[in-house]
Length: 128
Image (cartoon, rainbow, N blue to C red):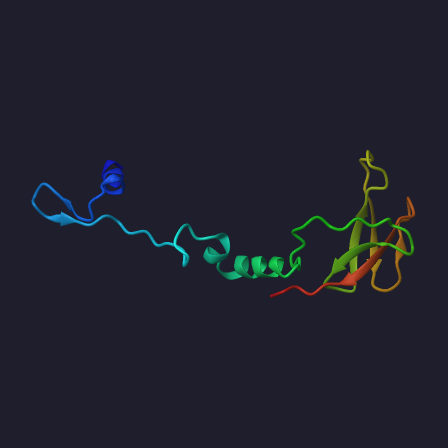
């Protein structure tokens, strides 16, 4: 630890050690513009693809908060799915502790059997 601090604080390009040998300070890899690399410059693989999609305004893995819908027949809650049906849980009231579960099928919007909110299944492609 002390050696690293010494290497960082020494203004000389070459340090003289006890045995008379010279040691150069450690060089750090910097970003292309000189400085600390950003998240996009360091990201690889799936993280990189996700960051690029978010820059384009897409939400490939439903990371962001979903858009608010009224739940009526003309403006139903959108449920993304990679299949043609999906199990949906509806909290009919804000302070309700019981979840009403029902199957939502592709096609026309369907109603929650308890509260009457409308849900519509929309096909969603995964980016990979």
